[in-house]
Image (cartoon, rainbow, N blue to C red; front, side, top):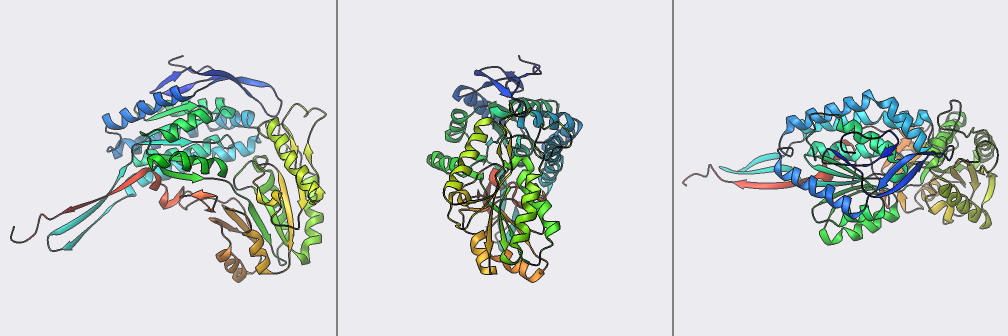
Length: 488
């Protein structure tokens, strides 16, 4: 397996070749429980091979200094993804469980993200100054070397490109740690990238693996920067593992996005968005709307209308049209989420919509979990504090604006938040005090490549997208010279 990838088998992609080494495993369709194909899970050996290739490519080629080549490569990668976006979306839907429309939504982020990063190649400048007569300073930006990128299974295309595109634009070579749950999708992504003839061998290398592969990547002295998307718990562990090498870490971690709904909100416009914020990607999204904070004057109406909406969510196969929500990634995740819900109920949460696993009928073989709505009075309850990563929404009632802000800020997370009100003064006033990296007024999940994405507190280290997008992948060098000093 050195030149072509088998349709139903995924291998690593290193130095422009498919490397079929590691422990052979199966990848499943979470909508049906059927085996989709096989893949090899790599570990330390495969990761070290990829790192060595990336290191040699960075040192021995002009990739790091050839801006024209990097711009050409990124432009062609964007075109290659566009040409096969439907094929990729279909594979992600089958292997990930998210609805086909949601997979298409994910893939739609790929091309503009790559093109934005390509534009940064010619627009990312240092600066210079004559700070005294004939005395100059130059500030230049240089790629750090090998970029380690770890991507989660919930959005394998969009979240990979969000880190890979700026790494390549900066002039880094890259080693990708991709998850086994989306192995066939990973291999298709690698195949798309490999189709770009202008891309030099060894610039992009992919290993499918889990903990051992990630640990090798993070601890390796030849990988100076890590871009990781995943849980806050793992992010903390990576900071410890990378401390000895003083790694440059960009971490996009967990979230507990609140919808703060004030009494003047257009409820009929708000609740469809709240519903989608819970069900998109089956709640397996760092920006999932997992909390709704409602003013007491409209609490009864919101309870009634939101409960009806969630009870009527049609759950089913990702590929079948007409469904409102797909499957979770696997049955272990279904069990984990259900245990969290049961514990919350045992600890006093009031059930508004129970939802839960589907254990009978034609969907019983899949990893399905119906939306759940729990009313909670204590902001310190585990179901409020912990990232569920599933379609579970908590409802809390507030009286004053100050109370709403305190509830919104009551978790360790601060990735995003939504403020619902017709009062523009209030929206800005509350936004200034809510501790979150992205805040939407009367909306949810609107993201732009030209504006930064990241979180406060335990949700992020650094920022992705926007004008900061290259910062995790460059070093800044100050050069001082005095060629024009009089009298020398």
